[in-house]
Image 1 (cartoon, rainbow, N blue to C red):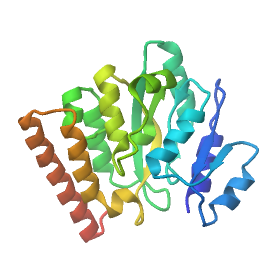
Image 2 (spheres, rainbow, N blue to C red):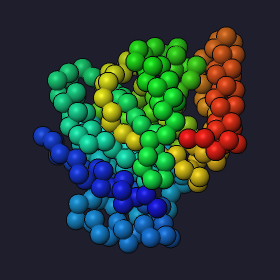
Image 3 (tube, one colour):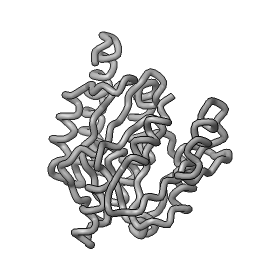
Image 4 (cartoon, rainbow, N blue to C red):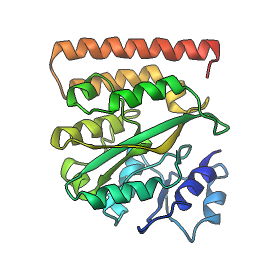
Length: 245
C-alpha cells in the first residue's frame, strides 16, 4: 500500500498556487478508505464504482475547478517543489497548453532503479517530435500537466483503453499543440510486482500499437514501432528473469 506516501507527496507541495486535490476511489475494500479519512479535510473524495481507470480519472477532471491539471496514480510520487515548477512554467508562458518533465523510476522502498531506462527516456524526450512519439511513448505520465481548457478542446481520456489511455491522450494533444519540455525532476514512477506495467507489459504494448495505428497509416512507422516495442519487451523480460534493478 503506497497511497499514503503518494498523498503526502502532493499535500507537502509548497508554492504560490492553490492546490485542489481530488481522489477518485472505486469503492476500495482494503485500508484505503481509512487512510483517506485521515486526510478528508485536505482533499475531495469521490468514492463510487467506476468502469475502469480512465473513467475514474475523467470523473476527477470533470470535477476539477483549477486551470492546470495532472494526475498521480496511487503508487507514484511528486518530487519536492514539482508543482511550484509547473505553476511557474505555465505562469511565465501563457501560450503553453501542456508540458512534461523528468521522472525517476523507484521500487517498493522508494529507491531509484533502472537508471539506464530513465536516461534513455530523458534523451528521447529532450527534443519533442510527433513522429518520435508515434514510434514509442517516451513521456512519463506522472510528469505531465496541461491546461483544463486544452483538455476540453482535445477531449477527455479514452475510457475504452485499459493500459494506454495516457499515450492516446498525448497523441491527441501533440496533434494540436507541441508540449513544453521542462528539464526538471517532477515525479517518481513506482514499479512493483503488482503494478500493471510490471504484470501486463505485453498486453500494454499490444494496446499501444493499436492506439498508434489510429494516428498513423504509414507502414514504416508501424514497422519501427514494432521493432522498438520488441526490444523493450526483451529488456523487460530479461530484467525480470535476472531479477535486475
